[in-house]
Image (spheres, one colour):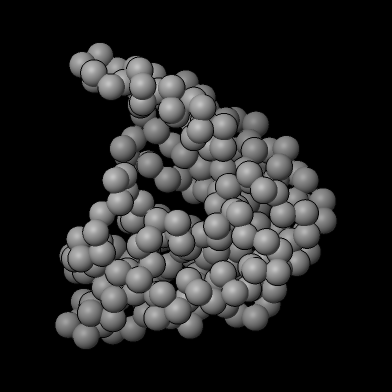
Length: 224
C-alpha cells in the first residue's frame, strides 16, 4: 500500500481496463471478477475506455458470490474525459458513478492535459462533495504540474504516467507493422503522454512530485 495523501492508501498493484481494440463488456466483467477472486483490489478505468459499466457489474457479482464483502474493500480509479467543459465535470463524475453503480470513487484523474483546466475548482468540488476521496492528474509534465499547483486549493494526489518497455517506443524487429505503429504513436500518443522507461527516466519530474507530495503512479507497468 502507498499513501496518496489525506490518510488515503492505494494498493501498490492494480488492474487496468484499457485495451485496443476495446474488449467487449462480457470479457471485461469476467476478467474483473476473476481478478478480484485472485486478490486484486485496485482497478483503473476511464469513461473513454467503456469499461465502467462492466466493472460495476463485476463488483456487484463479486460481492454477491463472496470474494469481497463490500465495495469498501476495493480502490477504484476513473478518469475525466479531457474534452469535458468546466460545467460538465460534476455531471461527468456522476455519470461514471452511475455506470459503476457506486456512491464514490477512491481517485478521479484528469486524463490528459490536452485541454488544460485553468480553474480546478470543479475537480476539487468532486472531492468536497465526497464523490471521490482524492483527485489527481495523468500524463502531466513538471511544467503542467507546477502550473496547476500555483492555483489549486487541493493539490493533485497522484500523477499517473506511462511506463513502457523502451522497445515499444521504437520499431521492433519482427513486427511488420512496427513502423506504422511508431508513426501513429509519435503523431498522437507521444504528444500527450509523459513516458518513463530506462531510457527516459524523468528524474526531474519524479523529484518534483516527491517534493510536492504527489505520488507517481504507473500505467503500462509491464510494458504492454
